[in-house]
Amino acid sequence: MKLLILDRDGVINQDSDDYIKSTAEFIPIPGSIEAIARLCQDGFSIYIASNQSGLGRGLFTRDTLDAMHDKLKGLVAEAGGSLSGIFFCPHLPEENCNCRKPAPGLLQQIAHHAGRSLEGVPLIGDSLKDLQAGMAMGCRPILVKTGKGAGTLDKLRENKDPLLGQLPVFDSLAPAADALMDSAPLTAGEHTRC
Image (cartoon, rainbow, N blue to C red; front, side):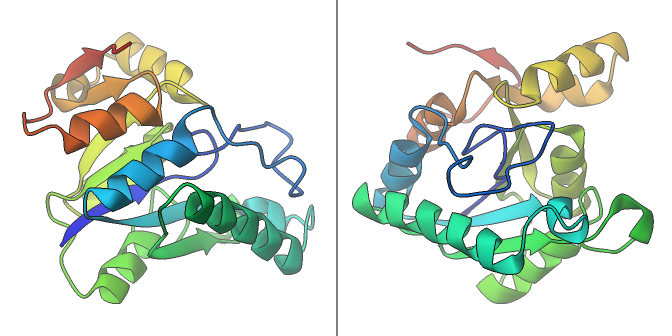
């Protein structure tokens, strides 16, 4: 069974510093839904791990979050795919929970649900928190430049972070998905595909 873990905001849908608070604000990044469907058709089980502190901040309700996820699942189904699970952390950063990325709690929940180790499982994110959570569980981190990704890449470069030496970087989820479905191994560095 091939697993893949995706962050949500900034990877699948447009991100906002004001949070995504409604189904109207949940706008897929071009090509992301189709990429998820292609991955499913290629045999991947896809899980989402998402920090959703807007819930803890009272910016939206659990019902609204469920409606956003229903919209996502519906769009993916229409494109010919499905999601194996959506796991989210509702807590504020100051609550110091174990599920808010970069802590590994959400990924531990996914490992339990999938009934397997996440060692070597690709994890696609746009923030350092995503990548750090994945590395804590032995995942293969992949960075996309959508959402906060371009800024994350700049910070990694500024800090001469050793992670850059092992990190594949893609413009968006669509080319990252194509690379995962390709038989060639993923390599570190920026990848640009038309």
